Structures are given as structure tokens and as C-alpha cells.
Image 1 (cartoon, rainbow, N blue to C red):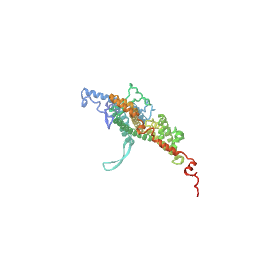
Image 2 (cartoon, rainbow, N blue to C red; image 1 turned 60 degrees about the horizontal axis):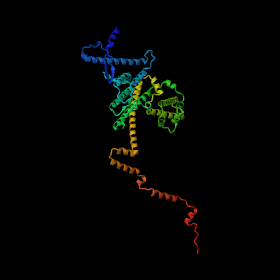
Image 3 (tube, helix red, strand yellow; image 1 turned 90 degrees about the vertical axis):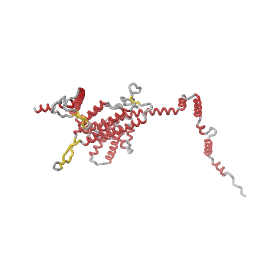
Image 4 (cartoon, helix red, strand yellow; image 1 turned 120 degrees about the horizontal axis):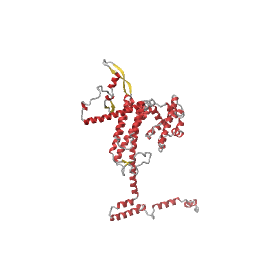
Length: 493
């Protein structure tokens, strides 16, 4: 009987509405003990129009509630709809949910996100991030009682890493959405349509529309504004990458990944890469020049090899309990250089897919807080990289347009007669004759005429003859004749 009364008291029709708290939408599952609300009384006793509006909003809230139930049901089941308990962990389910939520809104153009897409993203990401409100830690605090005594009690607060990073990621998310909204007022560029001759790209981004700019390029003010937006998005990208790298470093390395590693780090790395890292004149920038024309797959393969080698060397160093030798010191130097290359790879190629180590950490991670931070920061990093790529496409089109204008002006400068004829078409006939004569005079003048030289009176001729005279060698007899050495001695009296 008590259970029946409790079910009747908390029936489905007694759930109250939708409220907003702290910028986050949530559902209040408070019960109404008085039964279903009466249509008469209070604000609900309005006219037909208000009743229709309230009915529409109620249907919308009901659909949102059903959608939220579906989302959290999949999370509880671990994406195993059979309910047999063979699903993934809660951390992996939340990570997949956040990742899949961002897939539907791929940004192919520099334009504001549609209202429907933005509303769906904001609503569902709030639902998934609401889990972090209940991930807490206990901290000791002092509490004063009524009688004046002071006691130490344990209180709950949100976990420290979530308390710091979740608001920062939300701020970065808002900055990217606002950046897309700013492009609604820019009309100096557009994207090629199907009717354009050059609407297809000839690079690896063939599915992305081609941006078009005016023939003279963007104006100076618009170009400066684009560069400012690029710097802003680049800062967001760096912040998201820093948070993602920090979270991944805190995840435990799964044992399955360690067991799959070879025993020797040099064999895993390869002789060519090992020699470059062990060289005395090591230059990290050499790798950027070496891989500038490499494919994305090859760069990811190199990244996997370097990470595996670093992991092998670290395990060997820990196994020796800190004992150092000449071989271990050299290995430590190569390890530091390899970690430097890994760090620079992330900055050189921010859009690279995840490595084998990162994928293993995400799949085997059981910390729900770290899973949410990693997936959310990765989604923001991907959106920032996409916007940055679209901005660079527009700036590249502007550079091509400006270079074409410079080539045309340079071509006109190299052909003065053609340029003169084009200008002379708009003048009178008398002026045309005078201009042609002056043009002929200027074009017939040579460098000798301009400098006042002549072929008969060459200033270099005398100098050359003098050099030839000086360069003639005199024989020993001639030298004695000139000095008087062949003359007979004077007669003595």
C-alpha cells in the first residue's frame, strides 16, 4: 500500500517544468503532491492564444525530456542496448557521446552556425557536462558551533581539475561560436557555387567549398580584421591543446600498450631517426623540413614510433632504480630530444589524428572526469583548427589575387610601348604624334648616348693600352741595355 501511494504521488504527470540555473538548462524532477495542476487558476487561466503557446512549449519540453532520457539511458547501458552488461565503461560512453555530438556540425564555411545546430549543441553539451557537478572531493574545513567551539569537518566540493578546466573550456567554446557570428557582416568574399568554373578544389580538401575574393583582393581593413580573427582563434587552439595534453598526461598507461612494445627502443625508432636524434649537431627544425611534404599517415606513424621509443627508454631507466652510466646518460639525452620533437609535432601539425598511445589511454580510462575533459577539449581543438583552416583559405585566395595584380603591373612596366599605346588612344591626334616622337627618341637612346660616350673616344681604350704596355716583359739584354750595362768602359788618359 505504501508503495502504491508513493507511485501515485510521484507519477509521470506530476513532474514539474524546465528551469535555468547558472546558465545551464536542467530538469526539475520535483513532485507535486497536490496532483496534476488545474487548468483554471493563476497564470494558466489565460485566453486561447496563451493556452496554445503553453501547449506548444509543453510539447517542446516533453520532447527535450524524451531526448535527455534517451541520452542518459545509453550512458547507463554503456552503449549496449541489449542490457547484457557487455557495454563500455561510463567514462568511455561519455567520451563517445561528446565526440559524436560534435560530428553533426562540421563547419565547411566561415558563416554563423545555424540556430538549430547551435541550440542542439548548447543544450546537449550542457546535459553531458552536468555530470561533472556531482564529481566531488572531500576537503577539511573548520566549523564553529553555537557554544563557541571549533571543530574540523569534511565538506564536499567539485573536483579541483574540473573546477578549473570546465569553465575555461566553456569560455573557449563561446569564443569560437562568437567568432563564427562575426563573419555574418563580411561581404567581401563568398564561396564558389556549382555554376562557377573553378568551384572544385585541386588539393586534399576537395569537399570544402572554394572561397572567392574580389579581383583586387580584400581591402586593407578587411585583411587586417581577418588576421586579428586568425590570431584570436590560434590562441583558442593553443589553450585547448594545452588542456588536452595535460589531461592525457594524467591518464594511466594501459598494460596492453606496454605489452605490445618491443624490447629495444632503437629498433622501434629505426636507424635513420635514431642517428638524427643522436647526432651532436641536433636541430629539431630539421624534422619540419624533412616532413614538410610528407603525408598525414606517415607523420602519425613517425609519432607512434617516437612515443613507443620514449616509453621503452623510460621503463628501462626506472628498472635500474636511477643508476646512471654512460649508456644511460646518452639514452636520456636522446629521450629528451625525442620528447622535444613530439612537442613540436603537435604545434607543427595541430590537426593530426590521435596516436596509438593516446587512443589506448582513452579506451582504457575509467576516470569519468578526465574522460569529459579530454573529449570536450578535443572537440574545441578540432573546431578551432577547422575555423583557422577556413580563415587561411580566404587569406590564401587574397594572396593569389594580390599577386596577380602585381604580375599585371610588372608586365605593363616591362612593356612601356604597349602601355604608351593604351594611354595614347584617349588623347588627340596631335598629341599622339608628339608622344610617339618622344617615345622613339627615348627608346632610341643608348647607354653610350646617355653617358656622353662614343665608340671612337672610348675612355677605357687608353687605360687598356697602358695596362698592355706595362704588362710586356723585358729580356735580360734589354734591361742591361737600358741601364747601360753593355757599354764599354770609359777611356783612361
